[in-house]
Length: 177
Length: 127
Image (cartoon, rainbow over the protein chains, first blue to last red):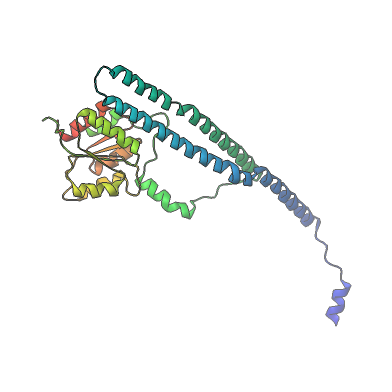
């Protein structure tokens, strides 16, 4: 009885101004965070931009492979042309096939420009978001990536270096001399 | 000693374009017996079925890399003396040294021309 009366009589404890201030700050931060997440437009990135980049790069790969094959086929056919009266005409025909195949560069250039622009947009939005939330990168590697990365580091190379080979052919030759 | 133009050569690369380029360069040099494989596993199977005078292999391939293929070849009693040239777009000194330690006979950086390929084949196959 005593307990029930005491509970009924006492008013709920009012939070201190410091706690209220902190809660207001948290609410403001959450609101700000929601705005930044919205500005990131993550759905647009995953629904439109990334698939577009995949598709464009896939097309570039296909176009370069197709053009290379056409150029090589023309060159191989040129090498096996009979040296008869029509030799020059036939060689010229093959050369024009090669010129035509080189048109891929214009189209692939445009496709790559679209991908570069998409990456630039992605970079801008991520940088803005990271800055807004003062994000810090978690240390370590995603466990699902660890195996793949480990194998790649141990056994695979990283592909061609930008700006030419890391070690020149002459320096490599010196190692084998 | 002149190059034996009749020796079979195995080209290992997962890019058919590169296989075709090397095939044409080898043809230009006079080699006609050229087989190819798309990775180390396929190459090992070919090496067990035919005696090759030279292996020209890319490094970056899956599931078996050129480096792994090289180690398999050098560990196999029947294949260990087969001349092996690594051809790759990547050329960090530590990788070249690793390949050399594993027993590679020479190392070519892509892109390369017929003259480079010829000089390495001559160096490896004793012209």
